[in-house]
Image 1 (cartoon, one colour):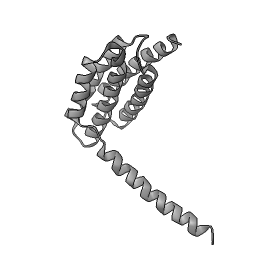
Image 2 (cartoon, rainbow, N blue to C red):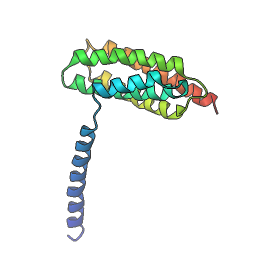
Image 3 (cartoon, rainbow, N blue to C red):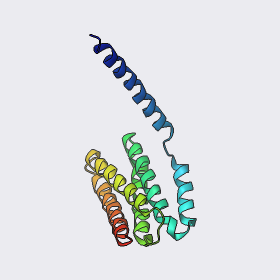
Length: 153
């Protein structure tokens, strides 16, 4: 009986912390203005910083697209997916051996590819080809980044 009370208290406390953490992550959600500001920053950045900034941009755009798709705003979500494809091509073209934070960019792209694969599973049959194509573009950018990480070692 002595161990049941502390375990139950710990369980209740952990549930409360989880809900606080979820609420704080909702407050830090990116919106379209943040994405536009990051895109402008990435376009004007030095070439050695662009890969990381573009990877960050793709990740934020993917998260926003997923939220819009879940909210039923398919038009905005598909527009973002098309923008993600365009930025992923830029990543593929801008990867160089002197990139700053190249490994971090690769990790972000890997996480983004995972999130897009989840979106493929959750998407409707009509929307799936666009999501799969976006996933393919992001995976290509991730592979190019990963290849450059290993070349620079």
